[in-house]
Picture 1 (cartoon, rainbow over the protein chains, first blue to last red):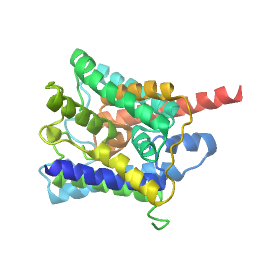
Picture 2: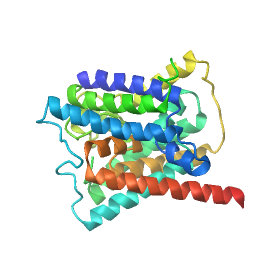
Picture 3: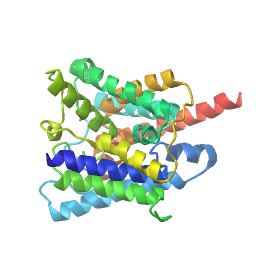
Length: 145
Length: 156
């Protein structure tokens, strides 16, 4: 039960802040490449540095559950095929998110403020989640969650 | 809200802190760095719904097995509240909705394949996940290629 309330609360706060800041994780690099605007890129950098600091602090509080250091143990891809798969998947994700106009989290925020295209995006998003977990994931096997 | 609280930098720090805190104290633990993700948590909610309504046996990450993970609901509601309070709410139809539907389906497939939406990839990179570093490099490459190709298409 606590997980439902905790995740709903995090979603509410993050959604509120994301709507006010117009933050988009892919928008940072896109704006920089297009018009050399670094406002959103700074947000991406802050999230990266912030999560590194947060997980370091959590390690100091509770070292048994959280890894610390630049690299965490047990997360290295199993071989060259896994490395290529993750890289290709990442490139596809970047391409699709940029062509659709915003990263998936920003699409949720746009849906909340009334953008019809974002609701269409989310309809495909959740339909694909069920299709992927029903047929594609059992076929290829999952190495990440 | 003050100017500082509306900045992307504040959003990045707040999202990272909340993701770490909910992973540590909000029972959102067994997949590492699982605090905030729009693709994984959406997948968990959709699968949880089908498991409980239709009796399906789809994969749900262990935090969301018994009670649903509601991050995505909170995202939409939080954004709705923020836009209503500040007079920015409005139904806008820019067209191209079939295209967005297809992009949404492809984005979910790619995100589940690499293990998270771009937000969680960044948080996992901060955690020190090697696969997430690779995925982030791939995403950055994809964004640059897509942006340059869109500019090229717009200039022709």
